[in-house]
Image (cartoon, rainbow, N blue to C red):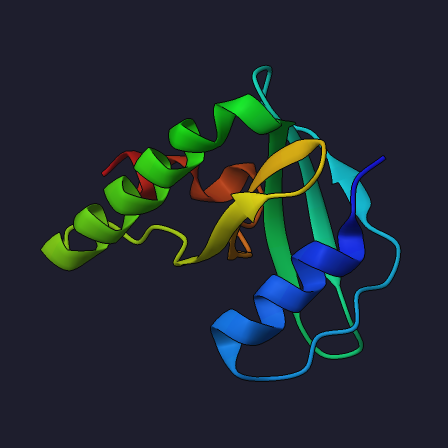
Length: 109
């Protein structure tokens, strides 16, 4: 069982704003991690989950995203926080609206 209240508290601490999560919505797009969108009444975040012992993978991904963002060459999701609950490692990121297939060529450029 994922401890959504712990993750919501970490989001609130990282953003400096209260965050009271509603029921997460599973989303596809990966084969290594579980992915969900976690929202409250005004904000949504993209959350990756894996086994607690995989926390170093998320710390490295967070650092890598921050480094890529610094280059200004491509838009990447801003890491918000990462941590470990009793059962899961997690990485919370900005949720980007990636649009549909019409933007594939733009993303490739």
